[in-house]
Length: 274
Image 1 (cartoon, one colour):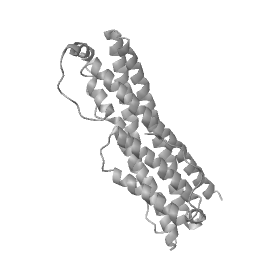
Image 2 (cartoon, helix red, strand yellow; image 1 turned 135 degrees about the vertical axis):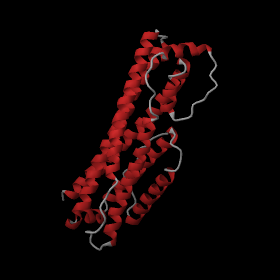
Image 3 (spheres, one colour; image 1 turned 180 degrees about the horizontal axis):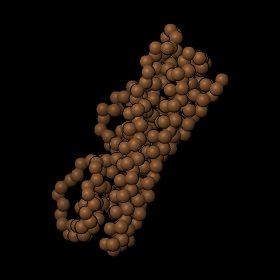
Image 4 (cartoon, one colour; image 1 turned 60 degrees about the vertical axis):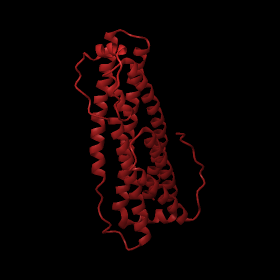
Protein backbone atom coordinates (compact mmCIF):
# COMPACT_ATOMS: atom_id res chain seq x y z
CA UNK A 1 0.00 0.00 0.00
CA UNK A 2 1.53 3.31 -1.09
CA UNK A 3 0.60 6.30 1.04
CA UNK A 4 0.58 9.18 -1.37
CA UNK A 5 0.92 12.91 -0.96
CA UNK A 6 -1.84 15.27 -1.98
CA UNK A 7 -1.99 18.65 -3.65
CA UNK A 8 -3.26 21.73 -1.84
CA UNK A 9 -6.05 22.31 -4.35
CA UNK A 10 -9.63 21.42 -3.50
CA UNK A 11 -13.10 21.96 -4.96
CA UNK A 12 -14.32 25.53 -4.61
CA UNK A 13 -17.98 24.72 -4.02
CA UNK A 14 -18.94 23.58 -0.52
CA UNK A 15 -21.30 20.84 -1.65
CA UNK A 16 -18.50 19.14 -3.62
CA UNK A 17 -16.33 18.95 -0.51
CA UNK A 18 -19.22 17.64 1.57
CA UNK A 19 -20.02 15.07 -1.11
CA UNK A 20 -16.40 13.95 -1.20
CA UNK A 21 -16.40 13.58 2.61
CA UNK A 22 -19.57 11.50 2.39
CA UNK A 23 -17.94 9.18 -0.14
CA UNK A 24 -14.90 8.61 2.08
CA UNK A 25 -17.15 8.02 5.10
CA UNK A 26 -19.27 5.54 3.16
CA UNK A 27 -16.24 3.56 1.99
CA UNK A 28 -14.76 3.39 5.47
CA UNK A 29 -18.06 2.37 7.04
CA UNK A 30 -18.54 -0.39 4.51
CA UNK A 31 -15.01 -1.63 5.21
CA UNK A 32 -15.85 -2.13 8.89
CA UNK A 33 -17.55 -5.42 8.00
CA UNK A 34 -14.46 -6.78 6.25
CA UNK A 35 -11.92 -9.05 7.90
CA UNK A 36 -9.26 -7.39 10.00
CA UNK A 37 -6.24 -8.39 7.94
CA UNK A 38 -3.04 -6.40 7.56
CA UNK A 39 -4.01 -5.35 4.04
CA UNK A 40 -7.48 -4.21 5.14
CA UNK A 41 -5.95 -2.21 8.02
CA UNK A 42 -3.53 -0.51 5.61
CA UNK A 43 -6.40 0.28 3.23
CA UNK A 44 -8.39 1.79 6.10
CA UNK A 45 -5.45 3.94 7.21
CA UNK A 46 -5.05 5.22 3.65
CA UNK A 47 -8.80 5.88 3.51
CA UNK A 48 -8.62 7.78 6.80
CA UNK A 49 -5.85 9.95 5.43
CA UNK A 50 -8.06 10.81 2.45
CA UNK A 51 -10.98 11.53 4.77
CA UNK A 52 -9.00 13.85 7.03
CA UNK A 53 -7.49 15.65 4.06
CA UNK A 54 -11.06 16.27 2.91
CA UNK A 55 -12.02 17.32 6.46
CA UNK A 56 -9.23 19.87 6.45
CA UNK A 57 -10.71 21.35 3.26
CA UNK A 58 -14.14 21.33 4.86
CA UNK A 59 -12.82 23.32 7.83
CA UNK A 60 -11.48 25.99 5.49
CA UNK A 61 -14.97 26.79 4.20
CA UNK A 62 -16.47 30.04 5.54
CA UNK A 63 -19.67 28.12 6.30
CA UNK A 64 -17.82 25.69 8.57
CA UNK A 65 -15.84 28.40 10.29
CA UNK A 66 -18.98 30.43 10.92
CA UNK A 67 -20.81 27.40 12.35
CA UNK A 68 -17.98 26.47 14.72
CA UNK A 69 -17.23 30.02 15.84
CA UNK A 70 -20.78 30.84 16.94
CA UNK A 71 -20.90 31.35 20.69
CA UNK A 72 -23.91 29.08 21.19
CA UNK A 73 -21.99 26.25 19.52
CA UNK A 74 -18.89 26.55 21.70
CA UNK A 75 -19.77 23.36 23.56
CA UNK A 76 -19.76 21.25 20.40
CA UNK A 77 -16.73 22.95 18.90
CA UNK A 78 -14.78 22.29 22.10
CA UNK A 79 -15.92 18.66 22.04
CA UNK A 80 -14.48 18.34 18.55
CA UNK A 81 -11.26 19.99 19.73
CA UNK A 82 -11.00 17.62 22.69
CA UNK A 83 -11.69 14.74 20.35
CA UNK A 84 -8.87 15.83 18.07
CA UNK A 85 -6.27 15.58 20.83
CA UNK A 86 -7.60 12.19 21.90
CA UNK A 87 -7.36 10.93 18.35
CA UNK A 88 -3.75 12.07 18.28
CA UNK A 89 -3.11 10.27 21.57
CA UNK A 90 -4.61 7.02 20.30
CA UNK A 91 -2.69 7.34 17.05
CA UNK A 92 0.47 7.88 19.12
CA UNK A 93 -0.25 4.76 21.16
CA UNK A 94 -0.60 2.72 17.98
CA UNK A 95 2.64 4.16 16.59
CA UNK A 96 4.52 3.41 19.82
CA UNK A 97 3.10 -0.12 19.96
CA UNK A 98 4.23 -0.86 16.42
CA UNK A 99 7.66 0.67 16.97
CA UNK A 100 8.24 -1.28 20.17
CA UNK A 101 7.09 -4.51 18.56
CA UNK A 102 9.31 -3.98 15.52
CA UNK A 103 12.39 -3.41 17.66
CA UNK A 104 11.89 -6.69 19.54
CA UNK A 105 11.12 -8.54 16.32
CA UNK A 106 14.37 -7.35 14.75
CA UNK A 107 16.36 -8.43 17.81
CA UNK A 108 14.72 -11.85 17.77
CA UNK A 109 15.32 -12.25 14.04
CA UNK A 110 18.99 -11.37 14.54
CA UNK A 111 19.43 -14.14 17.12
CA UNK A 112 17.65 -16.71 14.94
CA UNK A 113 19.71 -15.80 11.84
CA UNK A 114 22.98 -16.02 13.78
CA UNK A 115 21.92 -19.42 15.11
CA UNK A 116 22.45 -18.12 18.64
CA UNK A 117 22.51 -20.55 21.50
CA UNK A 118 19.47 -21.67 23.43
CA UNK A 119 20.18 -19.24 26.28
CA UNK A 120 20.37 -16.22 23.97
CA UNK A 121 17.26 -17.28 22.08
CA UNK A 122 15.36 -17.87 25.33
CA UNK A 123 16.30 -14.37 26.49
CA UNK A 124 15.11 -12.72 23.28
CA UNK A 125 11.85 -14.67 23.19
CA UNK A 126 11.17 -13.65 26.78
CA UNK A 127 11.97 -10.06 25.87
CA UNK A 128 9.54 -10.22 22.97
CA UNK A 129 6.78 -11.70 25.13
CA UNK A 130 7.38 -9.09 27.84
CA UNK A 131 7.15 -6.39 25.18
CA UNK A 132 3.90 -7.89 23.91
CA UNK A 133 2.50 -7.78 27.44
CA UNK A 134 3.38 -4.08 27.77
CA UNK A 135 1.87 -3.33 24.37
CA UNK A 136 -1.34 -5.11 25.26
CA UNK A 137 -1.57 -3.13 28.51
CA UNK A 138 -1.15 0.19 26.68
CA UNK A 139 -3.70 -0.87 24.08
CA UNK A 140 -6.21 -1.88 26.74
CA UNK A 141 -5.92 1.59 28.28
CA UNK A 142 -6.33 3.22 24.88
CA UNK A 143 -9.39 1.10 24.13
CA UNK A 144 -11.01 2.23 27.40
CA UNK A 145 -10.39 5.84 26.36
CA UNK A 146 -11.91 5.14 22.96
CA UNK A 147 -15.12 3.96 24.57
CA UNK A 148 -15.31 7.16 26.57
CA UNK A 149 -15.06 9.21 23.38
CA UNK A 150 -18.13 7.58 21.84
CA UNK A 151 -20.57 9.40 24.13
CA UNK A 152 -21.62 12.73 22.72
CA UNK A 153 -24.34 15.10 23.86
CA UNK A 154 -27.35 15.82 21.63
CA UNK A 155 -27.76 18.94 19.55
CA UNK A 156 -30.17 20.50 22.05
CA UNK A 157 -28.46 23.88 22.29
CA UNK A 158 -27.61 24.28 18.61
CA UNK A 159 -29.41 27.03 16.77
CA UNK A 160 -32.01 26.13 14.18
CA UNK A 161 -29.59 26.53 11.29
CA UNK A 162 -29.71 23.22 9.43
CA UNK A 163 -26.35 23.92 7.80
CA UNK A 164 -24.73 24.38 11.21
CA UNK A 165 -26.16 21.07 12.40
CA UNK A 166 -24.99 19.38 9.19
CA UNK A 167 -21.41 20.68 9.52
CA UNK A 168 -20.98 19.66 13.16
CA UNK A 169 -22.70 16.34 12.53
CA UNK A 170 -20.34 15.66 9.62
CA UNK A 171 -17.30 16.37 11.77
CA UNK A 172 -18.65 14.04 14.44
CA UNK A 173 -19.09 11.35 11.80
CA UNK A 174 -15.44 11.77 10.82
CA UNK A 175 -14.40 11.34 14.44
CA UNK A 176 -16.62 8.26 14.87
CA UNK A 177 -15.23 6.52 11.78
CA UNK A 178 -11.68 7.38 12.82
CA UNK A 179 -12.33 5.83 16.22
CA UNK A 180 -13.69 2.67 14.59
CA UNK A 181 -10.58 2.28 12.42
CA UNK A 182 -8.26 2.89 15.37
CA UNK A 183 -10.20 0.31 17.34
CA UNK A 184 -9.67 -2.23 14.55
CA UNK A 185 -5.97 -1.38 14.37
CA UNK A 186 -5.43 -1.67 18.13
CA UNK A 187 -7.28 -4.99 18.22
CA UNK A 188 -5.12 -6.19 15.34
CA UNK A 189 -1.91 -5.24 17.16
CA UNK A 190 -3.08 -6.71 20.46
CA UNK A 191 -3.87 -10.09 18.92
CA UNK A 192 -4.81 -13.06 21.09
CA UNK A 193 -4.16 -13.52 24.77
CA UNK A 194 -0.60 -14.66 25.32
CA UNK A 195 -0.09 -18.14 26.73
CA UNK A 196 1.72 -18.62 30.08
CA UNK A 197 5.47 -18.41 29.70
CA UNK A 198 6.64 -21.90 30.64
CA UNK A 199 10.05 -22.01 29.05
CA UNK A 200 10.60 -25.48 27.82
CA UNK A 201 9.63 -23.37 24.79
CA UNK A 202 13.05 -22.96 23.19
CA UNK A 203 13.85 -26.66 23.44
CA UNK A 204 10.59 -27.37 21.63
CA UNK A 205 11.55 -24.83 18.97
CA UNK A 206 14.91 -26.50 18.39
CA UNK A 207 13.57 -30.05 18.37
CA UNK A 208 10.67 -29.28 16.07
CA UNK A 209 13.06 -28.47 13.22
CA UNK A 210 13.18 -32.21 12.67
CA UNK A 211 9.43 -32.70 12.99
CA UNK A 212 6.68 -32.12 10.46
CA UNK A 213 3.99 -29.78 11.68
CA UNK A 214 0.69 -30.18 9.88
CA UNK A 215 -1.34 -27.86 12.08
CA UNK A 216 -1.90 -24.39 10.61
CA UNK A 217 -2.75 -21.46 12.84
CA UNK A 218 -5.26 -18.92 11.61
CA UNK A 219 -4.99 -15.28 12.59
CA UNK A 220 -3.27 -12.02 11.80
CA UNK A 221 0.49 -11.53 11.62
CA UNK A 222 0.83 -10.78 15.33
CA UNK A 223 -1.14 -13.85 16.42
CA UNK A 224 0.74 -16.04 13.94
CA UNK A 225 4.08 -14.98 15.44
CA UNK A 226 2.80 -15.64 18.96
CA UNK A 227 1.73 -19.13 17.86
CA UNK A 228 4.87 -19.80 15.81
CA UNK A 229 7.12 -19.13 18.79
CA UNK A 230 5.57 -22.22 20.38
CA UNK A 231 6.48 -24.42 17.39
CA UNK A 232 9.77 -23.98 15.54
CA UNK A 233 12.53 -21.46 15.00
CA UNK A 234 12.16 -21.77 11.23
CA UNK A 235 8.41 -21.21 11.44
CA UNK A 236 8.96 -18.23 13.73
CA UNK A 237 11.53 -16.69 11.40
CA UNK A 238 9.17 -16.86 8.45
CA UNK A 239 6.32 -15.27 10.40
CA UNK A 240 8.60 -12.65 11.96
CA UNK A 241 9.65 -11.47 8.50
CA UNK A 242 6.03 -11.16 7.43
CA UNK A 243 5.14 -9.29 10.62
CA UNK A 244 8.03 -6.86 10.24
CA UNK A 245 6.86 -6.03 6.70
CA UNK A 246 3.30 -5.59 7.94
CA UNK A 247 4.43 -3.25 10.74
CA UNK A 248 6.51 -1.17 8.33
CA UNK A 249 3.50 -0.60 6.09
CA UNK A 250 1.23 0.33 8.97
CA UNK A 251 3.84 2.66 10.48
CA UNK A 252 4.01 4.57 7.21
CA UNK A 253 0.23 4.88 7.10
CA UNK A 254 0.02 6.04 10.71
CA UNK A 255 2.75 8.64 10.22
CA UNK A 256 0.90 10.19 7.26
CA UNK A 257 -2.36 10.12 9.21
CA UNK A 258 -0.75 11.59 12.32
CA UNK A 259 0.46 14.60 10.35
CA UNK A 260 -3.01 15.08 8.86
CA UNK A 261 -4.63 14.87 12.31
CA UNK A 262 -2.30 17.61 13.52
CA UNK A 263 -3.37 19.85 10.63
CA UNK A 264 -7.03 19.26 11.48
CA UNK A 265 -6.44 20.16 15.12
CA UNK A 266 -4.57 23.33 14.16
CA UNK A 267 -7.47 24.36 11.92
CA UNK A 268 -9.95 23.83 14.77
CA UNK A 269 -7.78 25.87 17.10
CA UNK A 270 -7.53 28.71 14.60
CA UNK A 271 -11.31 28.80 14.18
CA UNK A 272 -11.99 28.84 17.91
CA UNK A 273 -9.36 31.52 18.56
CA UNK A 274 -10.90 33.97 16.11
